[in-house]
Length: 133
Figure (tube, helix red, strand yellow):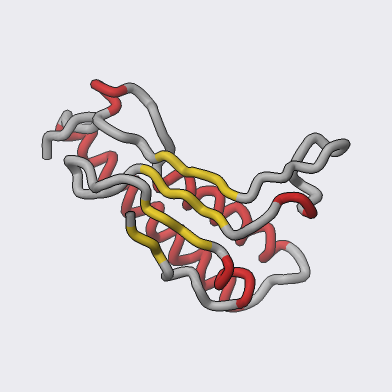
């Protein structure tokens, strides 16, 4: 198991631990990540509004295997980028708008563009959802 530390930049992120839970698959990437070091007990968005959620970790599972063979069995990086882009757009529409958020949003949108471009090219070649190049 290895630990990722790229996010550590402030006291909140310094306490959050990201662990890679599996070995890289056929495509060279891992598929399971555990995030811990937080408590949802005080998060007003957690739970059903009447009971607090006491979760202290979450595991993210990415798509593992070609969709045509394995089905949709996990998230994609496009899903996570879409969530982060939505949050940054919301900050930019509110009182926390700033140059740094705008630049980060631009780069995330650029990453989304290139991932979509790759998928469309694979679809055009008839290899999307397979291990073929």
